Length: 248
Ligand SMILES: Nc1ncnc2c1ncn2[C@@H]1O[C@H](COP(=O)(O)OP(=O)(O)OP(=O)(O)O)[C@@H](O)[C@H]1O
Image (cartoon, rainbow, N blue to C red; front, side):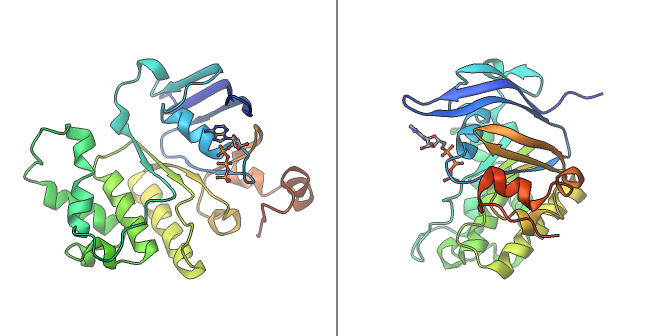
């Protein structure tokens, strides 16, 4: 069997005054679409920071592509889109295509030339996120939801094995949230793109994901989405208050 792409074993993390994560263990295999859910302050962003190597665990072990996190060098294999990406004003002087191509800089290094087939690759990833007709448009003239798709395309052009998204639908209206998650589900299904998604939209996203992790300092549930469906709303309320709604 192939190695998990990401594996956490008994990971804990402490900020100076806050014990943010306690004894977290789970793994992500190729092709998984994992939603991490939990109330505000439950440690979701901290967990992503640890996976991205921006913070080191206080205890426990993180393995990326079978290697201990501190020995892992191919950081471009992990694409990341933060929750505040969609913040260009209408005068920002770059086209959608240019923003997407800038995603190659991380992969190639700052001084390498952008390859000749970059435009073709940009076209492919823009198609994957459903924005092929907006390549020449100024980025600032796109809606928040469209800008967020551009940032996903920008991450995808570097061909990451894992795509990590931190609350990507913040500020996007309900209708566009649906089609945004459809787009992610297509990437996962048709291109076997492994996705880790931090979200509060568990009801909207639940029929598109393969796994769920419920986090509140520690992992209260991790498993297949079908198992998650068997947990009652009362049990979820006990853990999260009313922060998480499950709708079948
Ligand atoms: N840089 C920091 N220094 C000290 N404490 C921090 C820092 N960042 C986060 N914390 C604390 O760690 C805990 C977890 O925060 P984190 O941002 O990971 O939660 P979250 O689940 O992502 O929250 P939200 O849903 O509000 O984004 C919180 O108690 C928070 O106040």
